[in-house]
Length: 341
Image 1 (cartoon, one colour):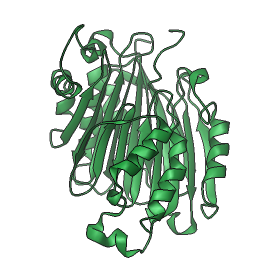
Image 2 (cartoon, one colour; image 1 turned 60 degrees about the vertical axis):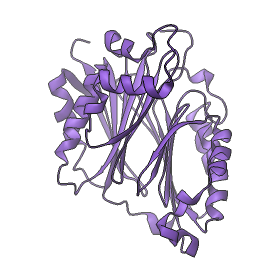
Image 3 (spheres, helix red, strand yellow; image 1 turned 120 degrees about the horizontal axis):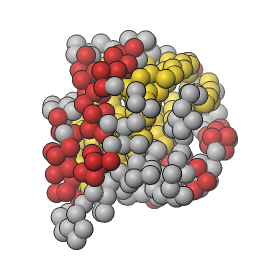
Image 4 (cartoon, one colour; image 1 turned 180 degrees about the vertical axis):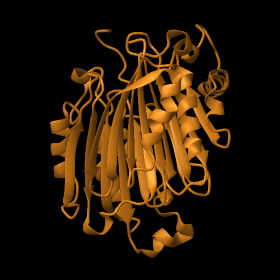
């Protein structure tokens, strides 16, 4: 293991807002009315920038210098890696949302176990510090709160969850979120996420080439993809399909290689089996020796399908933990390792 390197494991923050102000009903745009300068202010607090963007009628998707940002009319999701200070986005987001007549009604913060925890700045120096910061920052009416660390038999993978909600948003909806963290990537496949020395291609052009040659473009052929390649290595993409997003981020350096895949869906989707195919394709792009999957859902319709998707790839489920959270519903955390391990 390298003594130091880029932190691939992301921090993920999901904030949901509500309100009856007429401005939020303007073409039902809500938070999408936030100007780019306002978003830049938020991202400056986090210490990252926008490198590419795409939008459709449902939401805006931004590729960041460190991962992704998704803006819906009443929901914002920020996912950042490295040494970003993600939780510092909460106060400015609450402020800007208030100017649109929106108030925060629920919060969900999740992350895995950092590869380089000692490199993390405040308030991410420990999960305890993160929880204290969240408790002090969130409005008091988000009084239904819970924090938990979900363990596994794999020492490098554990799952940290904090949720908070007001009274009116305790019951989760039908959507699910799948968060996949992969380590010890296949070295040959990881090399595809390096740019050639002395290359002159832009991040956009190089990103499109990586999407094609790695098979990422085949994970969900229906999605519009916004991708970006970093110099000398690394890759990010957001997939946009109707009101659903997917996202992939890659840190390919040997010794601390990491890739993540995240997608959302509904338990009422006619093609929920599409989830199995997408998950299987995403993992095949990287062939990790170890991975974890966190499934957040109101029901238990989704998580049993995870093992069904991964076991044919030679991955064995080593641990499974479950817990219930206000507003989020059930969180099931599974870890897998290659059978050769």
